[in-house]
Length: 358
Image (cartoon, rainbow, N blue to C red; front, side, top):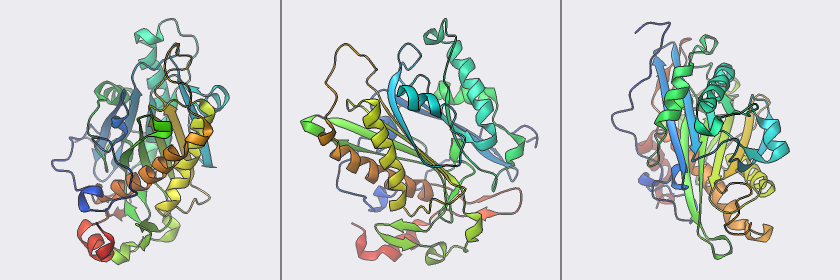
C-alpha cells in the first residue's frame, strides 16, 4: 500500500464483546434492539476507516438523520464542557437551535476538508436544491498520537463513502471511522454507542448516543477505578492523555432546542462517570438532536421540563456504557512515532470486578 494514499480498511472479521455481553450492565433502563444510536428511528451511521500502518490510523464517521436538510431542519442543542476543539457549525446551532445537515466526526486537521465535502454532498441532493447558505456540522478529535495527523488523509471520496453507506442496524465500534486513531483513559479507544428506551410522561421514546472517545483521566467501571496496570497493560504517561470527546445524542422524544441543550449538557456530564478528567486540552462537546422536524404541523406536544428526568437518566447511562464499549471493542494500535495503545482486555477486567458483574 502506498504511504501517500491510505485506502479504506475492511471491517474487522470478528468484533470483541461489548460490555453488556460480558455482563457489565450500566443502569437499569432497557436498551433498544441494537443498543446503538441507530435504535432511534430514522438515524443511520456510516464509517470510512483509513489504515496504513504505522503511519495512518484515521477516518470519518457519518451520523445521518433521515431527510435532514435546509428545508427540513431538526431541533438541536449543543454544549461545550471545554471548548478546546473545532466543532464546525457550533454558533448557528446555538443561535437557531437546529441542524440542517448530517453530523460528521473526523480527525482535527481533517475537519475543514470534511466540512467542505459535506457541503458538496448536500448541494447535489434534492434537499439542497437552490441552497445559498448551509451550516455543515463537523466534530473532531486529535488522533495525532497514533496517526500522521499532518497528512490530513481524509479526502472527499472518504466522506461521501461514509455518508452513502450509512445504515441502520448494528453500529461498528472501536477502531473504525473517526475512532480509528484515538485513545482514552490510558487505553486504545475509538467509537462507542449505546441506547435506552424510556417512557417520559407515559410516552414511548428512544435515546441513543455515539461517542468519539479520546480523553484523559482514570477509567471507572461500575464505580471502580481501573488503571492499565490493574489489567496487565503497560502504564501510560499521564502527560500523554490530553484529548477530547464528541458525544452525539439523538432521540425521538418531542423536545425543543432548549431541552435538547439540557440533554447535551448531561451527555458531557456522563463522561465523568467513565472517569474523564476534563483537562485543559480536552475539547468535550455534547450535541443532541431530535428526529421530529421543527415546525411539524402534526405530532405530539413538546414534553414539559418536569418530564425530562427519564431522558436525563438515559443519557448518563448510555454515555457511560458507550465509552466502555469504545475501549473494549478497540484493537492494539502502534502509531508512526512508536507509541502503542492497547484496548481494555475483557478477561482481566472481569476478574478485577468479580462479584460486581451481573
